[in-house]
Image 1 (cartoon, one colour):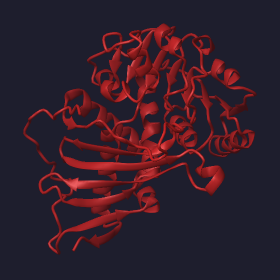
Image 2 (cartoon, one colour):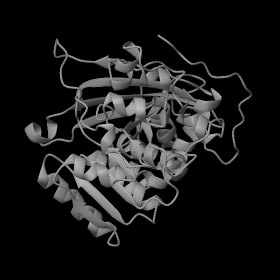
Image 3 (cartoon, one colour):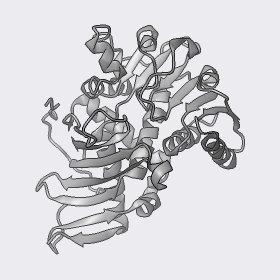
Amino acid sequence: MTIKQAMPQEQTRASAEPKTSLSSRGPELLYLNREAIASLGGGSSKLYAEALEEALTLHARGDYVQPLKPYLRTSGKEGHIADRIIAMPAHVGGELPLSGIKWIGSKYDNPQSRGLERASGVIVLNDAESHYPVAVLEAGLISSMRTAAVTVVAARYLAREKFQTIACVGCGLIAKAQLTSLLEHYAQVGHIHLFDQSPAAAEKLSEIVRIHFPHVRVTVADSAEQAVREGEVVVTCTVADTPYIPFEWLRKGAFVSNISIMDVHKEAYLRADKVVVDDWEQSNREKKVLNQLVLEGRFSKERLHAELGEIVIGAKPGRESEEEIIILNPMGMAIEDISCARRIYTQALREGAGVRLPLY
């Protein structure tokens, strides 16, 4: 197991920050459900974009610990890509160091077979000094919103400065978070192109966009190709286990936020002007498309343009021309979840929110 160790440095804690020391009443957990998280600012993209900038900065500077996340599969054989539970542990530094883990399950047929959201989970936060657990947070909202924040932050560096069109393939909960977050941050966007294998899902999402962003035109495409060809920013939000987006679909200057990982053909990675990941070790595994290319000897870390945090801190350039085609391949990092949960947790301490549960 490869672990990136945090760089030793003197940690300072801002006087305005609430302390995470254990209660005088004894060890206890602060429980925050989805409603509580939303009321503390966790329903808005602003909190997550700020937390992601911080997490990516810590990542680039080495102020974190993040073991490779294990995948738990119980089917007894290689099943669907979205049929697993993932453990995502991490420690994040900065002014208020915290450790934690996201335990998140995914079942691709939950919506159709059980009437449930595809993904579900919890985040546990641990005190950095005692290692005692101090909080448990519902993970579904945080996970979807921080995933959207990755695209929001990355678009600032990798998309055309005045991009006006977004293509989104897949129209579920993740797509809703992606589009609403992007539209909250980039007011110049005027046209959204949607595609989903379920026309009803695409129409539902289009109606949500029209209600909340009436100035934005929404087109439901007849095919993934039709949508992708229109997007200056392309976001994949599917449960696909086979690539379907060839390089030829991407327009000049496109930025692809390949959130669902398996959507873009191998040749697109090889022909793109820049390929960016969130974390190389996390991305080069599990036989995802990038990992397949590495195993075939056709891609390597040396060929990678940058990790996203390197671009955020200015160590590597982002977009350098209007014509570049750039692919972001974000596997998702535990430090992102823990950084977002930390912000929500500290806000809960300030406001006295949540339910306190004694450990003993």
